[in-house]
Length: 176
Length: 208
Image 1 (spheres, each protein chain N blue to C red):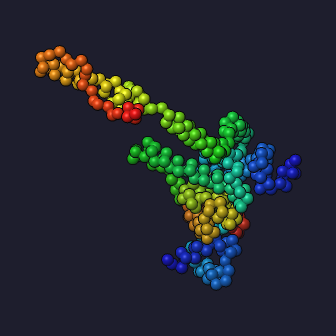
Image 2 (cartoon, rainbow over the protein chains, first blue to last red):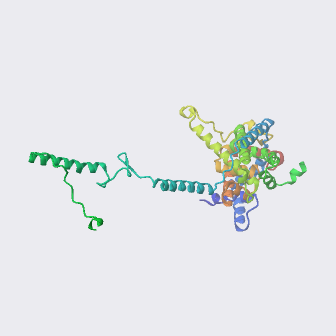
């Protein structure tokens, strides 16, 4: 970069009176020798005085009217669509959670008193004990009848009058 | 009330507007509409676009009043909004120009101001016409144009330009200088006419 180009950076500072010290002395010394620099300084000084003097553009009545309409529309919009300020309330979700939990616990609690249903029969109806269940009682009776028939066939006689029974243990009263 | 509106500062007015005083906003509009239009027009070079930008600026001030904080001057804030909208408008124009049909026709060329134009119409009473200067301003790159308009046309201080554009002070000064150098280069032949005419009449540089 030549000296002239470097000093071009200081043209505005010079014409605005912001140069001082050594750089100002150097600039002025160069200015006296360099015709191009002189012309540039002259033209920039002219411009800095001419530009502020340019005619000022002003608004018209049509502009003012259009602006009023725009602002009126903005005001109407802001008042019409006034969204309510939603304030986040921690209590609402807490209450909802508590209610759901209560319902869940209640359901589990009341549901435990009912017996599960298996194959259309409730647990109360189903009995696995052979003494109570009708189905299990029938099987030994059928077994006895089949045994009696088998015995009759083997003997060829009339069936015995009394079916075969297991000997029951003696009760306390019999001992007496 | 006129006297009252003159004495009240912009910052007080915007504070009142933030509290719901719509008339304070109207006062601010009256204070700034002309100077903003002048600024934006000199920046974008088109009156219709400039009016649209200024309309949008005031709408944004109205809708976003609570975004203004007292850490900066109101003028800084409103000029920042207007400047950003103006730059957006220039970018849109650039895109429109890129996709215009004329770009595909080799015969057509964008008209360029010849540097050595010496027509009488360029000067009025030995002074450069505003529209000639405006055309030269329009040719400047946006980063030079905005500082030249703010500094030399609107008369802002370097410090305030630095705040409006959010660039360092040194950068503002550098861009102003380079913008001026570019402008005088584009207008040198016309300016030589004005200076030579002035020298003949008065024996010194003509300043109109």
